[in-house]
Image 1 (cartoon, rainbow, N blue to C red):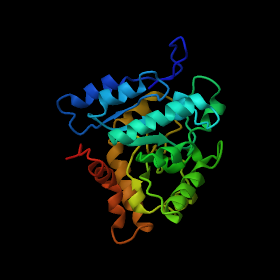
Image 2: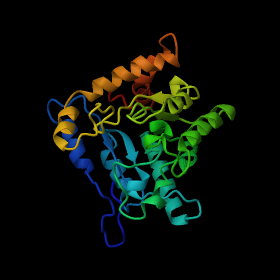
Image 3: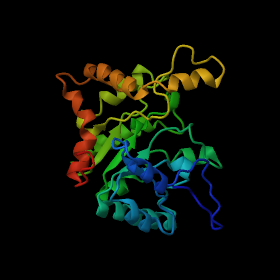
Image 4: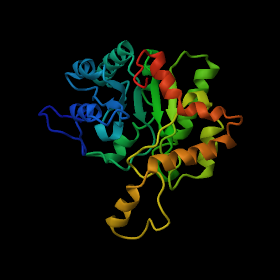
Length: 274
């Protein structure tokens, strides 16, 4: 969902409507596609948009820096809109997938450095306390493992520690999309998988962003890139994850990562994967 100003000027560099995505998922032959909607919480009709699409959707996705969603407890107007949105998500039992970590694929329309800080755990506890199931995309890992603006990966780990140490009834998850990317270092993978239990992790690939690039990735020209992207990266990413995860989770326990989202939807009464 795009960001708007008072004159309805869109401040989002990339926008695909919920209606388009829903219709795409409903086309013959696309039964394996699941509809993830995106609604900006500051929209005047945000609640109406959730009510309109929630029955067909499996989750709501936010990319705070691109959508310019500000989590600021001192901004009363924003906080009020966010709280209403969280209440409605909890009522509809619709999970919220939030991008965490630096974002480079979809830039912010203005003041990019300012908005990057909201791709973090800011505002997450408020949603969790209201009963919203929250999925932290990429486990807070930033592109190329850079720590901008903060080490969000550590923030994510600390949030899960708080859940366990204080016995919080939070529906808190993180997905492993993009963690097996070209620039991801083993140190970061160790930090993620040695601290997060498999029951808290959800499989994701970050498709259509390339998960793995070939050795000739630096060769100029789009022709080679498109030829490579046309291969089944989804299958390749799955194989990489299945091969690597047993080093952290022995005895096949890592396999639940690939079914946790199914179980979450069933627990919420949203059995879209049946």
